[in-house]
Length: 265
Image (cartoon, rainbow, N blue to C red; front, side, top):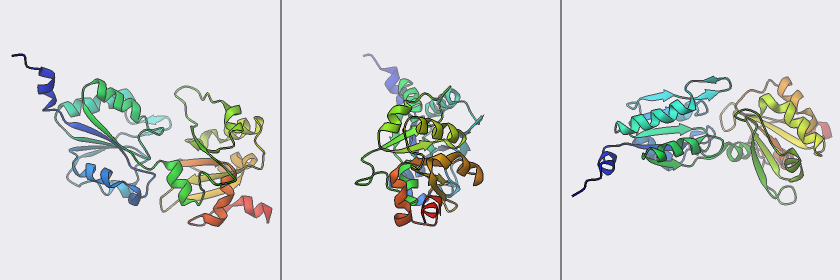
């Protein structure tokens, strides 16, 4: 009788969960994410996983930072992929927890692919993506009848260079949400303006969204680089472009620096 050694080995292999932590508010962590954390033998977390969520990690479980900020990676992505495979083969149940959702600019697809190719049992636990959580906290609906019939999420960070169809983005009449865009705010404004968006198109900068220190700065597209510089906006921050931003003065959950409405008063 032939015994499948691969199946035999798999019985002694751990599991990896790729977990979305949401934008920072621990109350937005899903029930499933919290349950999975309680099952972990090892937790690997990103820079965007807030301190409030880290406080929910079981005290008895080792937790290590494997995050990345611009020009400063604690571990290369390929090395992290290999580490997940190695630890799972040692029989550990691993929670790889990321800010937002693993499949929205979180490189979760790359990590899952490496695990699947290595024959590791893996599961993705979705999280509230920042574009949804942070805009809601700022009182900005991503879509609104008469203002926007769609929304488009865009990363302003490319592996080598940023290649986007700016004409299409400007012509969609969608709400545009730029992730990781603070350092490229000048280019974003210039490209959208040069492809037809009005200089008065409302924009919002949402810094530290869904956290106690959240700041919402609202103005017009032509002011975007000046707003970032004047108010010293730091990552993590989203850039929201579109007419829905004007709803913030009526719907926002907290105070905002609303230059758009001040200038119209």
